[in-house]
Amino acid sequence: MIDPTATVDAGADVHPSASVGARSTIGRRAEVRANAAVGADCRVEAGVLVDDSVTLGDGVQIERGALLYRGVTIADDVFVGPGAILTNDRYPRAVTTSSELADAADRAVTPVQLQDGASIGAGAVVVAGVTIGAYATVGAGAVVTRDVPSHALVVGSPARRIGWVCSCGARLVDAEGHPADAVPPPYALHTELICSSCERVYAYIPDAETLEERAGPPQGAPA
Image 1 (spheres, rainbow, N blue to C red):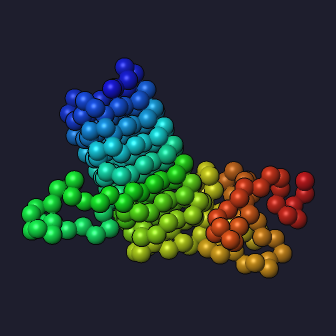
Image 2 (image 1 turned 90 degrees about the vertical axis):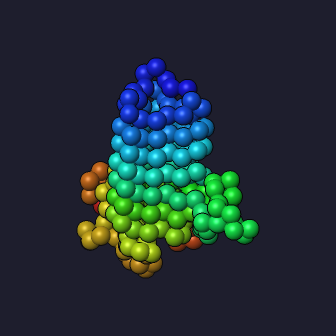
């Protein structure tokens, strides 16, 4: 079902069993396959593949040429950059054990999940079975082979954590104004991570390897 307020380009291919939410747009040559669900206020650009049963939350932006394969679930307010690929099979083979050409039904899908507010950079690859935490950022061209904690900034191949990002997307800094380390020093006098853009303050939670937003000014700052 396509909501009457949605806009679907005449050159897009949307399967009759797929759904497109209110005010969403589907671009030219985009393909939304059977049982896929696109939420409200989404933007799916030209040449994007939204495979069978893929789910997009509300406010999601999928840039040109991104490929989202069966088994992908995307929460609200997620950004997927141009040419990014979200895979679904960790052990792909072209043929079955009986030497017949494999098709989608022969493959064991290993899901990928992108949580609220996550961002995937241009050309990045997210390997099957990975969860990208809320408000995490995956750098352009990265190859993500394991879970990414919320608010983490990861780059490279294989992707590694180099720092942390705010809910607004800006890189967090330490009390000295330097980009925060991947693992903040445990015995620093002031351990908070600060957003110089929106002034949010976070604390590093070692056991969970993630951040927790804190109310009020940083330690040592005037109230």
